[in-house]
Every structure is written in C-alpha cells, then in structure tokens.
Image (cartoon, rainbow, N blue to C red):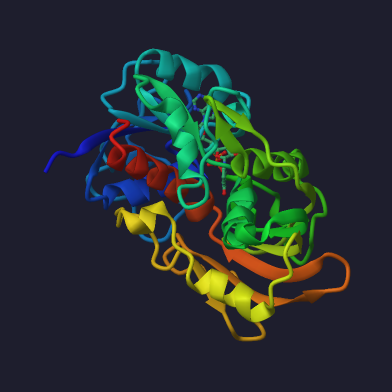
Length: 338
Ligand code: NAP
C-alpha cells in the first residue's frame, strides 16, 4: 500500500514530539523530514530532549533535523511551529505546493484557510478542493475539546456559551511554565487564550457559503486558567440552547454522535468520538483521556443561568494538537484532496 511522506515543522517541541510518536506508528503515513530551529539543526533527532513516555522511535533516532529550507522530502507537512513564525513560513510551503496541516494560531482565522475539527465541520475542507498547495488548520487545544463537546448539542441550536478552562502545563510547550509558578498553584491568565476561545468556535460552527465562512452568531465567553496537571485540559461549560431538551435527550445526543472520521473508519478516528461518563466525579484528566483522541463529557445538569452545564476533558497534545491535525490529513486523503 502507498504511504504518504510527512514532514514536521517544530519537530522537537511538545507537539512536534507527539507528531513523531503518532506518525511513527501510522498505517498510511511515513515520517521523512524533521524541521526545527537552528538550535537543533544538524543534530540527530535522538540527541534532543525526548519528553514523552517511552523512547524516541528507533527509526527516527538518527534522522538529522533541518532548518531554513523549503525543500522537504514530504507530501504533507505538519506544523507545530511557535505562533508568530508560522504565518509566513507555512504560506511559503503552501505556495511551493505542499499541503500544510497546522496546529499554530497564525493562519487559523485567515479567510482562505479552513479551521477544521474532522468530526465537527469537515465540510469546510471544500475550501481547498482542487488546490495544489494549501494550509488547513486545527483550532486551539481548548477550543477543540470544547467544540467536540458542543457539536452533539448543535441540533438543539447553540445560543450562548460560557466556559472556564483548567489547562494542563504541557499546553505551554517545553520547558513551559516555571515549576515554582505552577506547583501547588493555579494561574488565572494564559496570554491570548481567551481571545482564541471566543473567536475560533464562531468560525468552526460557521457555514461555508460560496467559498467563504459565514461565522456563527452565538455569544461566547471564556476564562482560561493553567493548573498543575501534566496532560489533559478540563473545561467547565455552561450552554444556552434554543430548544429545551431533557437531560436524557442530551445524553442520547452524546451517545449516538459520530462524525465523518467514524463513518469513513479513518485510522486515527476514535470510537466513540465523545465518551459520556456517568459517574458523578468524572470526567477527569488522569482517568479519561483514553488513547488521546476521544473527548470525555460528564456531569451534565440543568443550570439556572444558561440552562445547561457540563464538564469536558481531552488530551491537549493529541486530540488538541497532533492527533487532530493527523485526523484532518487522513480526511483530506480520504476525500481525495491530497
Ligand atoms: P514548543 O514545545 O515550544 O516547541 C516549539 C518548536 O518549534 C520546537 O521544535 C522548536 O525547535 C521549534 N522552533 C522554535 N523556533 C523556531 C525557528 N525559528 N525555526 C524553526 N523552528 C523553530 O511548543 P509546542 O507546545 O510544541 O507548540 C507548538 C505550536 O503548537 C504552538 O504554536 C502552540 O501554540 C501550538 N499548540 C500547542 C499545544 C500544546 O498542547 N502544547 C496544543 C495546541 C497547539 P527547537 O527545539 O530547535 O528550538
């Protein structure tokens, strides 16, 4: 079977390493190029600090990291570059004809770039149909977890959403937040995060009309915090719906939900995509991340202010980043857009 060649930009960081880990075991993709900063360039990948469980995959250990080039031996490029740097660099790769699946914030809100969660708005990928080189982005890690939890409620018409996030420290990259700041503490501010949480969902739940996204109009409010959890973002969600479903109807919407990746049986698709936890003290990041791809929801209850409230939990580096991007690439491939 043909395998698509993949390169990773930002291959040595927290998300880059997740890409390496997931792609090294992938049935349809083959990892061929690793790109990072001048700090890593010229070194073997195995010489850089590996921060995930297990070891650097054997076949990647001796691959040399490159930088400052637009010539990568790859059909698809996954980007885990820092914000600020990706804007022009991803464009340059796309202009050269590469398909770029990006995690980075820089191009998410650009008019010609789809912002896609494969289970939530796969139809937005039509924007890149028949293009040769292009960028497809996935949202901010908390926005992915939140939108996966909101999607099964969309049939009841989302009117307003208020969220508080409890975000893991791996979401800040490596070395990230100083240990003395986060151990035994909560930080009630993550630069730029609330803005992303309030703007990206409106594009994701928007409608594609004549090649342009008409943004959704529901009200969105977010408060974002960093907590001393290594992996897995937790989100407290209050939601106002146009309809007035019973809690049983909402539970049914979650248990029956499946997206296009499940219908197409894509390699990274989780079954089910959203897991409904019934225990009164779940979902928890320590217990409910699964293999990193599903989102867990629970504690669904009535709310005096907005109508309904619940908790959602998901892996920030897998479902919130590398895994989401790989799932988008699998979907592009299955749709014949690669
Ligand atoms: P990180 O751990 O700081 O890694 C940054 C990566 O970018 C490293 O590989 C680094 O290479 C490389 N890099 C830095 N400057 C560069 C340059 N001038 N040229 C080329 N490469 C350069 O960050 P991260 O957490 O993996 O995040 C990567 C991106 O994903 C960010 O945009 C972030 O917002 C987004 N994101 C992160 C998460 C998460 O959970 N962490 C979730 C969703 C999205 P060196 O090692 O050589 O310096």
